[in-house]
Length: 618
Image (cartoon, rainbow, N blue to C red):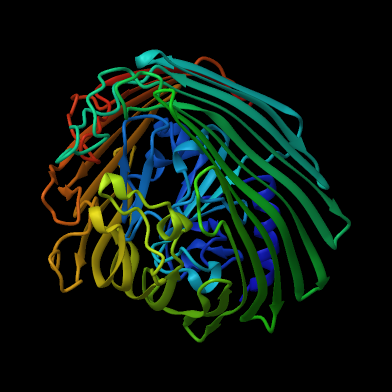
């Protein structure tokens, strides 16, 4: 090889900390292997959302930025800042881990990250890896991994600023400075988002109700204050140290009683320090220490009050050892301590886990391979071994074949295990007898470049044993198994000066419990999605559009509440007032499509947002 794998790894570590501006074919992808690879060498199915994509299509949330990617289904309970769930390749919302700058984001008591509170204005890049990743990242990775990189500076000191306003009296602003030189880099950013919102829920009261269980036709506001710090220093040729922090706090109003005082205060904070040390020319060590927190305080009609503080502490050490020009060995150790503080009477409020992992990456002839193995011990559920084997081969200069098999597991969340029982309401909220969920996945892919178009097709099958589903009065239960089959097609090209990219996904997520819901579609998974993006520049002007189509989904395990498919169209436009100043406008849901992704919860109609952005150009 012209460059060793380890050299690519170090290059990516330095590049991702200073400047992430890669051409798509040459993009360095870190998440699929915990070290850097050129995208066209990665054996997993990977998508990348760059800062340029975010600005080009004027995405406002992480969910919006990834919704059009293959295999992604999003459900939202009432607008900006409201509960948002991600179903990747038909798996559960807690089956996808979120990584920030190489460390895990804290999850709530459900075991799921709160992506609705992650401020997109502070994000430089998103990598999404589809398929099981427990062999590298542990519990919670049946569906895949999403890694988020915050902004990081280089070059001369540069300020940046943006401000905007739109429908529902929405206001946004962000500002910051960044810079650096060959040995030091820094980026400090902050922002604020506020909206009056719209009526989040039109639910029907219980019994036989749905949604929020109440009719409360008011506007449900949201505000978010956020900040990001990323700074580091290189000590000679042998060591880099970096500190990072992503902070988000605010309040979100919701429906759920006959009063208008329903409000949840939230705080989400992840911070850590990372040390990269080159022991020899062929051996580097990365050590990371981090903490993630999710806090929530709620006030329902002035009487039902509560709080929850979920904290996760992490330590990781990883060795990258170059065996020869074609083979890289990765070996390491992860430790995680989870705890929850709450005014509710949980039987158990903390647990820890530790794991040893190893991975071998390399080339043999015209083939690439990846073998990964992890042994994880959970304080509560004992030891689990997971593994991945992937292989790829160039069939020609323009055609590549990949295949993989992998296993994964998810430990039950604290809330599924220990949430206090509510016998008076007739509902059971937890189950202390739950077992971990286990999965095995097979995938086959082919990709190529032909007649000016880059394309890929992936087919997969995942079997999940002991899948945890919630079934009304019985609470969460392990069902015997679920089988998910899928097909993903994505392509990009340029025609008559217009950039096009799009995807088509088909997912069959089937309950195989052998009980009453056997053969049903797993809840809230759309069976088909289609997305098509287009963008063209006319000198200082640029115009873009996004078409998104979703097939039907069911809101419950019994498949009695059917949510119809829908299609939305967004339009964006921008004009460079000068080389540093850009004015933008976005019209979302142009044709005012009425649809639901969660039964009883409203989604936004046609809305407009104007903004102006200042970013000095070198």
